Image (tube, rainbow, N blue to C red; front, side, top):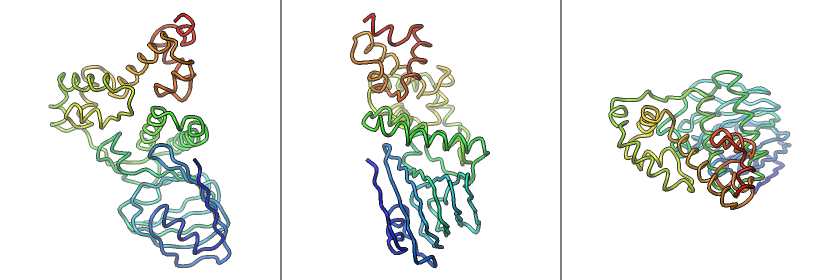
Length: 301
């Protein structure tokens, strides 16, 4: 469900933004203001859109979460750790490190924001944090923006009640964000290499096959195998030549095949049940694995 808030003065804007991001103090601004903020959740990720005729300068307490954004029009300035970062239309940005005080200034913005918690990031890459507030390149920024638009405008309205689709979409967004901005991701350690043995893979495979219908993460798989996320990823690469999440997708595809053979719903419903928002992607993966289309299997069941 989308929530919409419209305010017509700086005091009300102060309350809305403080509640959404972090407590701020407005130092100066235009008295006559209009701001609209819409918010929608995708699992544990929040999509915001801020627009209006409003301008102010403010200081803020640490944001608590990572707040990424895309500026469509207007101007934004964020300052933290002695660095001023100006965003202009077309720019993708990370507002500020979540554990640092910051300052900001806005001028008639129209911006889309994505709010990610550290817990959501840790489900994909344990302990990772971002080492910079600018994308690695314009190509990375464009891919990230395209992903956000697809999830908010196409996936959310249709699949918000399909848990595996939402989970897959969330992890795809996190992975794309990690690839877009510089991080502190470390290389594998000696402990990770030591733990990446066949017993680790067997424990992980058993967990995946027993829980494929649930919303499980790379962190869940690593915990079940009693190793770190890096160790489980290394173990799967070393012994199965794939990632843990790729193996999970393969198991879910096998479950979808069983549903098709049992005529347990339409192709679209079965695809969504096993985590596919796009039936066309499901059909391509299914044909690559089984040599026929899902509809052919369903008809012959």
